[in-house]
Length: 565
Image (cartoon, rainbow, N blue to C red; front, side, top):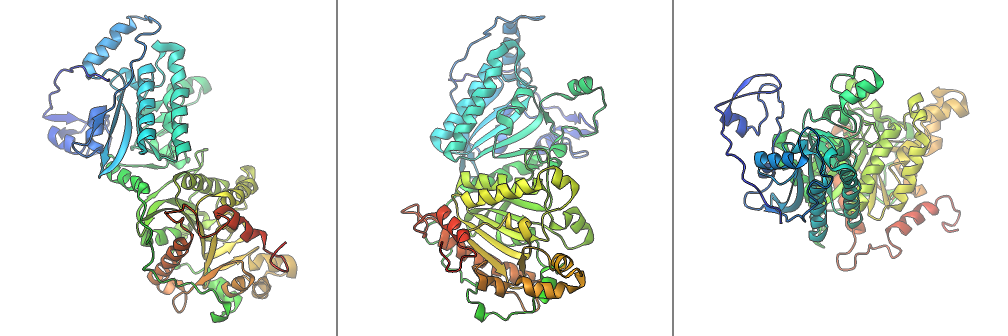
């Protein structure tokens, strides 16, 4: 059983000086602001008990018993014996070691947590800290609850030698068990998080978020500068730096963390068997019932700048959306967006190409043309959806994958191919909607689905009409002729069986009434998922062969004269 020693009572100062900007803040106000400076926004460190009190429902917290570990296993002595240092840290902090393991609730939803305390030996990872993190993970596994890791550490504890190093593997294996069990894991990175903690459990969670300004890395900046003999850029290793490079999912202000965690925990909710029954399916499945516009007119409407973007669709029909960023390999692609939210009470993973309306927005999103990092981010989110048993909904609107030099250097073809294989293997329902342009393999990389729908004025093609005309007609001005020949409009695609249905648009196009179009897409997705969701009593979909076999068969049959091999 973990015991707590008695720390000297802390006195609340009347005024507090911000450690970053040196502004004076009234002490009680500073505490109400959760130790965030109102002048510069700097987030001061919180100890583990204060962090737990901030995040969890009052009265819900229970400290977990942690098994006894070796005390001073090396009899280490530097300028002072390690045993003396341990005794002093326990007296000063009131804690037995650097990690507080608890279970409790956030907005009524159960959660297990391991919270690091930087006051205790700089939050270093020793055998007791590793045991506490592992105990929290094993408790989450036993209780079938999500796990939260709040990190604050200088790295592995040197005074415990190789036994400290082994805690990296021990805690990482504990996280792997939660992956295998399909349980959500979340890391909140606080300042600082370095060394063996960053290189083990801290970065293995499904969702990794950070407080503003929090620093994380394997090596510290002084070590790096001494090694490479170069000055590091401003903001290096900060939360914002890491987010921009796809290494953390987002940066959350301290005052928002509790509410955002509660949104994430909603993935554990599952609606009953009657979900979605009240919605009317707007999808047209007979091409003869469609008013077929000239293909070139559809091309123009699909590119209309006023059409709703993926984030606008998501914002209209998902509650509690938590956007996730980055491929976790060093890049973030703004042309692909995705995250978790609830669709009429059903948790789903939504992923889409993101364009924009203004020139500045389009440039910032690379005109909706993803880099390899965009497809790898999408793949990461789809794997997370598979782990958590969340349906996947993709929104397709791209001229195509980005064809630049850097994209080729970083493996554009491989990234697309990996997505095609992954989507065909996902063990959860997948619905894809072409909401605008469906350009070539860049679109198909989000389009291998159980149900593929298309908006009435959207297009889906192997190449743009202009590109086809330039290659085959030797004249890009023949784009309208090429569009007709490519059969890229919704009615033609429905006749070919490439799409399963067409979502009607407002008269004049979706840009004339974006709310109506988004609502039609929402109802179409609900109807498709209603059909595809596993039956609660059997755990099976309506497809006798199961979701993966049925999805693969859907694509296996394309191009066959009789529809069967």
